[in-house]
Image (cartoon, rainbow, N blue to C red; front, side):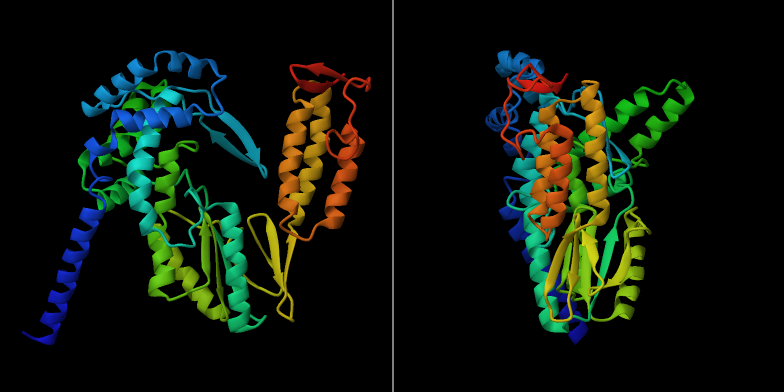
Length: 421
């Protein structure tokens, strides 16, 4: 046996050992009968009911919970997925970009939660890199920002203040996720056909609801054929399964950067990522390789947001602008665009409040969310200026002045909220 044959044999042997270990480790998570049990469905029902028990649909479902859960259990074990409830979409405009979020009915949310918590997350979580910080319990925005600070400190220690940052962003991330790529992920990590089929059926069900609303019969039939052959793209922005699968789609890109290229200072949060390196030429070549790899699973970079910048000049990541001074100090400031956007939003809120389209509590909650972001950056003057505007427009509701509800003639109480009169 030659040395090449021995090496080939060792590789195949190690793969077989690794496969057996994974099969033993995920035997419970990769078995539909162990995952989709009545006990797991009941636990998911109790969790999904938290915070929304006041809704009529939740109360109605709760009154018949045992029957509803049993019917769902029998239906899923007969390899049938009930048609997802056709809910009205919520349209929001984030940074001038239109986003449509589909609320998920509790009846549909329960099997999705069971599938994610008992199968998809336990298996896929260990396949992701540690610096992938979205949609996983124990991680999130704060985790990602803390990891970015640590990578910056390590990069400063290794390269000094003269290094570069490759910041990238995927264009229309959720809309460009191919159903075929979702199936490839499921087939790669799961052996149980029922888990593969149910996960993909839930992902495709929301696209099917769109197709069913098409009036042209020929166009409708053509789109249904494409849907059946996994030729369409797009996942629901609001479904838990969609977020977990979307997190795993660029996983090969993460491992390419971390493992094959050996880059330590890299972090990604869903569709945003940043890489640190001392050479601009190396990052330019890396970006070309990344674009070629992303094309294989149907994703493209946003050319306006993808750039290579010097760390000393600053780069923006997750609404914070980072800059490294010549002495190696990290300066964090709020992005200028976010400040201008918030000032405009407060002025629009004033007009909506007069026409009773929003309440003061809604404005207060939105402003408090922005105030929370300011604690992550140097923002004393910006925060003071914004509070001054808020005080001028809304008399400092609950924030800047001692608020007297019943002595202020400008406001009236309406369903525990206060609206402009």
